[in-house]
Length: 88
Image (tube, rainbow, N blue to C red; front, side, top):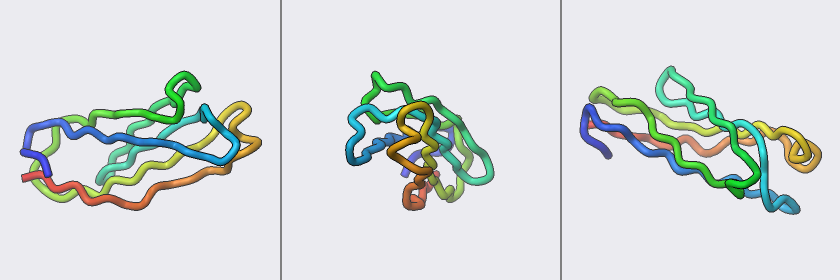
């Protein structure tokens, strides 16, 4: 839960067997909008993204990972469980 007009943080961790430093693109979908972020190998599968200021309401947040480079050989596209974000 966050207050209206504030920016929410979305923390993501990508893990895959046999892959210590996944690379690829993260798509964070919230409501009807999407933010895309590149995940570099040096980040070791971790990323924190700040969403823009949100209005009151309920938002469903889902993260999708699309591998690139050498990560493509070991991992297919994956997505997270949907999480509900409530803005008061």
